[in-house]
Image (tube, rainbow, N blue to C red):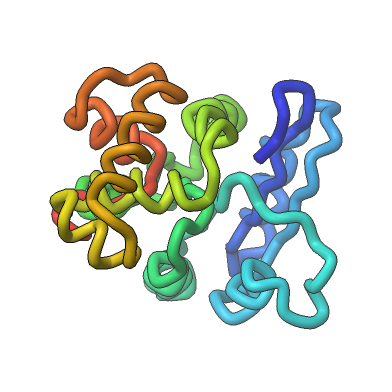
Length: 203
């Protein structure tokens, strides 16, 4: 994740070159973030998984996916990315508001904007990155415990899933609350949803 003085790295997925160019322009504000445009889901997944020729690329902080009806490239990319655990948060750009916005937000998208007005895009990217910034305080195991708590698993179920004791899970939960400055399990769940670590109605 970027530091407070580092511009975010953004992966743009859009099979319509003019729209991709406009998205890049909307994100550029003099900062030096790394932005890469993928033309389809296959290239995007290779980039995210750091497969050749993307072995040395920086990990994206945010993914911006363009929906271009009637084509399905954007939707397919969204569905494929959802299969990657702890993937970067996704902002959807659509040509119209006819898309089922609530469906995509419930499925884990961090935001949904219309391509006709990209002025809010940079602010949306910054907001998503800021929401995830507290995760830098956590270890990978703590992030996983947070995701499982938000997915509705009980302490015993988490312990079985991670092959640790219940007391270890409880210790992780207490440390999550301390580091995130959140006092309740419900608060942890709300934060995990805001940070796009889990989807509504899905473990």
